Image (cartoon, rainbow over all chains, first blue to last red; front, top):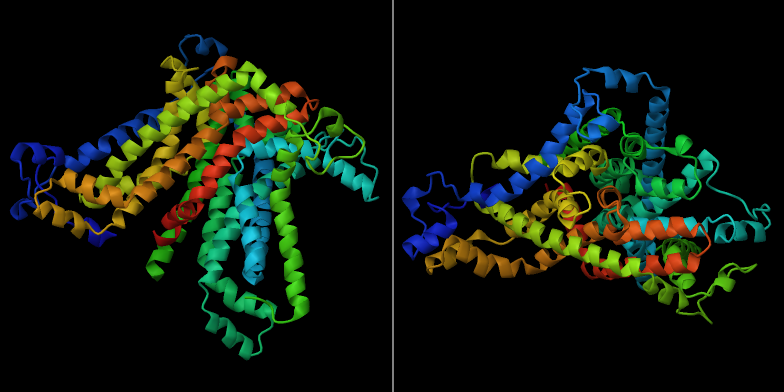
Length: 327
Length: 278
């Protein structure tokens, strides 16, 4: 990467060189002169990011130390209140409940996604050509579904009156689930959300791990086999260490995605869940700010989300850098 | 690796079929339901195939004028976001991969970190900021939001593709009299065209599918994009018109699923390229 970018840099702006001097051949002696060209090239992207991402982030911090309610929405000046909003959030037992629920939900979902992803990858690796192609295509199909469409379909599968799941449970004689509502009980609600999130998350993990598995040298496995290692031992001592770096990166990415689940929770709440008992951080921040017009308190909750994401990112980047060093 | 024993192979194949069903069935069920008559959907036992089905659900979806309005809004926002993000990202990717300049490393790290900021957390303040700029319920407002959320990824992926083209090719063209930008346009751009298409499709899918900001920024019915339209339809139906909701869902999902299947191998590379190769 660095070798390529050390290419000689022509003097003057790229466009200007072309029009101004006609030939515009890079002059070797000007190689070290600082050229404005790269800055001009990155400027539009940087400006957009700074204005539409940087500024709202800054506003988020500012709002979190102001009183910002309904009156401020209509133009009243927002008084500075210091850390009052933070104190409010920290002192609110509901916030802690939501935080613990979010962390638990995320841990369960990442765990299940990684576990099932690994199983599916191993199955893919052991399948014959035809079936592997079919299963691979099915995984792509699930991966490609828009989150909102997937959530609505699962909502239909778990529908109280006509849902297929209730019919299957009843038909198979496990229990009479006619008219059973999956969304009124918080735990059952979160289980349905988990099914949706995991269903959408497994394909990416499984296909990436499978791609990793195909890189595993056959001789290594065969050598382990000759040495009398059982299937489980081969997995534990050969396959897992080989996939280690990919596993940790996938786990980090899944964690980043799963702790900010919004669509699934929002849609299921509208379909009959009790919002108070099923909020996760993202929906919670939304409900406080846009639902209840407390943008100041919502900002604090949103900042907690940003902080958590940055913490995870730091772990993720460190993992990446460590891998780079090992190379 | 294929198991040696017959029993082992059978067990693996059985598992494969289970995975196949688990992954594909919900999608199959969405499409099947969308072709069923209301009486069959609410009948005592479900019909597992669309045989004897109807196009009635689709006709009803198109009859609701709101679908075409939402489709139009989605197309506008998506087209604008994809076009502008590709242009900005291409310029930035060119600079990041072909020039050495002060702040380059910092910029690369920023692009990586910015990608990790949870958009859901910014809903709170972006709504306020856009409101201040009079951009609520406008394509421009929603497009701007989408632009910043696809831009980091687009820059990152395109940079990867540009780096993959040897700079010597551009230099050779410059020796032959091309300008720096001309060499990039005539040599590198055609070579990365497939990558460009894959990146565009990725941005398209992200934009087309986005729900949270569409919900907050476009809060009037006539400005809804398709995901919010579908959810409004779903909420309004209250479990009474699953045929219609599934038809809407199928219509919304079909284009992205097709696009996704067309470019997926390149996109998987893109998703993990940054992660694995650094």
